[in-house]
Image (cartoon, rainbow, N blue to C red; front, side, top):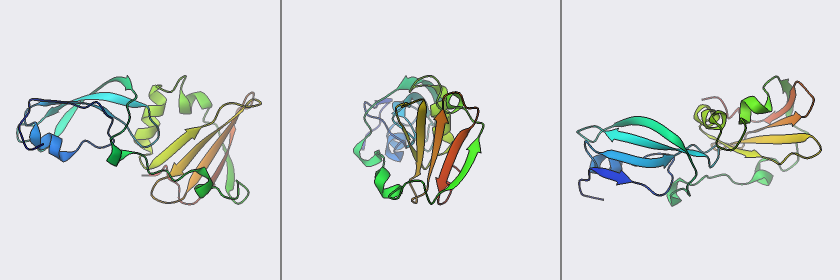
Length: 170
């Protein structure tokens, strides 16, 4: 931008606030839809920039969904690149984590946003429920690891298949 602004209002989502915005708004405010790679559900964040433009802090104001700026769109390569042979060669286990705990009630649930904060280098796909079952996939964005939680109506535990490095560890 190259100028000094007291406000920057972004109308496209980001996953990382550009440093140039901080430098261009010393002592100002940045209002931007911000989110993780996990999905498209973001939160509007209001940041107060430090007087020297070196940092910013603020609060999330509420859920939103905006198209991402081109350079910050998800690098997800597609399911078939990660799981070309299905789950047959994957490690299998179970978890007591429920669908509600993982996903919440809707696409803007706080749980989904919190999971995105905890598994920063993952992309998630939530399939439609079919025959009482719903798979939830996680794909590592720094490698080709993946995990699939299979939630079944009426079952206390979900089956989990995973392959590769565990993408949900920081």
